[in-house]
Image 1 (cartoon, rainbow, N blue to C red):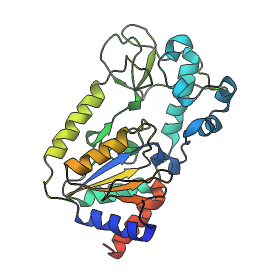
Image 2 (image 1 turned 45 degrees about the vertical axis):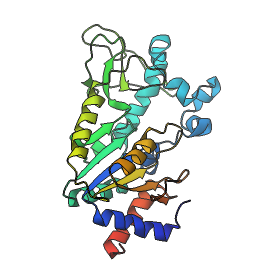
Image 3 (image 1 turned 90 degrees about the horizontal axis):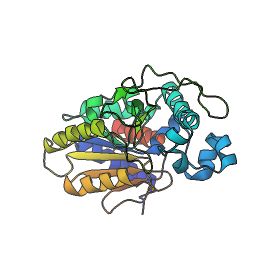
Length: 284
């Protein structure tokens, strides 16, 4: 069961105080405090995308590569709107707290996230220290794909109407003229080009291998990672055991954590600011 917040905050600060390196693991809940929509459950998704309620389409229905062939305007309406939203979003103050912690540690930090929104990069974290295990909306690939090539989406401009449908012309592959799609791992996805994510994972493995072996040298702070798609939570728990790391799990809805971990039933920004205040007071 979660510790009471005051005790848990002090324990979390103690973990950070003795760490030599920080691993930040993050799921969708990390972005909620920046104003990004909460897609938890159909109601949360439909509140953000009302037209899809009328068609009975859930997030998992739409996050499927089939739409790029069945209804390209719908597919790029959904992803184009998210691309535009993420470009306009300002990361919340918690990102800055994490940056400050990372900068103070001898081995810095690495980020492992299932989020595709690019908010860690926007907050100043280096691409070289991030694993985006489900890809990134800020990169595109061919829908075929005609090659294992991933390109930046920085030059793409997608116009989306009030029905969340994209206007023509839609993004096209410069090599074969097929439709482009975001380089995101979708549901039922057999054509995702994973070379960028594999390279990120290789860099992550090298960073982990170079860390000091003593218990607690690695502090893991997990933020807003749920159980519906448990990749991030499982990664945190695996490395807690394998690397003798400390773990702070921050999740306002699902804070339950393994024995020995700190659990905080708080939002990401609130928890990070409170832990930082405890560090500043010397509570650890």
